[in-house]
Amino acid sequence: MFKPHLRTHLKALAALMLWPACLPVGLAQAPALMLASSWRAGTDLKDYWVSEKLDGMRARWDGKQLWSRGGQPIHAPAWFTAGWPGQALDGELWTGHGGFEQTVSIVRQRTPKDQAWQEVRFMAFDLPGHGGPFGERAQALRAQVSKAHVLWLQAIEQEKVGNEAELQEWLRRVIGMGGEGLMLHHTNALYRTERSPHLLKLKPWEDAEARVIEHLPGKGQHEGKLGALLVEMPADAEHGARRFRLGTGLSERERRSPPELGSVVSFRFQGLTASGLPRFASFWRMRPEE
Image 1 (cartoon, rainbow, N blue to C red):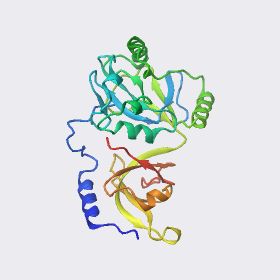
Image 2 (image 1 turned 120 degrees about the vertical axis):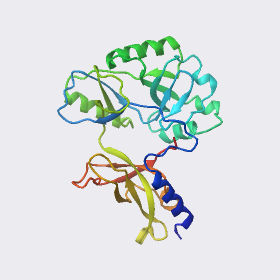
Image 3 (image 1 turned 90 degrees about the horizontal axis):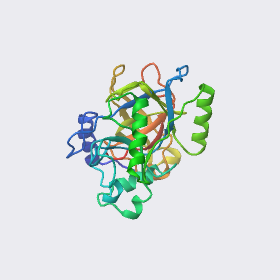
Image 4 (image 1 turned 30 degrees about the vertical axis):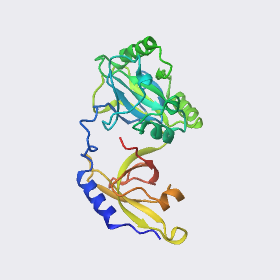
């Protein structure tokens, strides 16, 4: 029968005391990255470059070493990064549509397996240290990647769209292929290590992260298993910390072996209520340890 243990509650309490400011044990410093805002209808598209939003694992190449978004070294085989540019690249480690879990499984191995890494590509989308506007950075990135002549190092294609109808049609095609959405980069935007209003993401849903603080037991068909996760989103500029139940979207496996207390999960939702709670929140997946 499903019974949370005292030790897991204590572990969760310790994690919550550090959420969200903490970094993983042994971490020096997470790389400073540019983060996206959400696209809104009516955005003038003429100055934006559009690309597919890949459902991979974000990574930063500093010219010598690959790092995760959270600042942990990624132990790729030496051959994987041989010949890469000696300057910073921002991108996604990716194994194809629907391959998120496979990518995470490969990348998290401290002892890399050559055969598994042959399935991985680094899809670069920015040159953080270039200093120029995105239009110039994208051109310079393509030149750097082309010069490297490495098959698994690729620059994500950037294209223009004429209007919102074309943008939505592109989104439908991407979703139909099993993709996640689109990214829009303003051609004049500089690379700023913050959440930028000039870097936009467009998806058919919104997603966010929350920390698990309690396992709520199930009833009826879920008797003896997890019924829902009680999770907490960190405070932001408009709202304090928000707690809510996350029960929809959990698989049978996750109900029998739920995410650990203190761990971080991703969920999908459709907008926020006036009090800042997500509408129609649904469990999506565990956030990979980064």
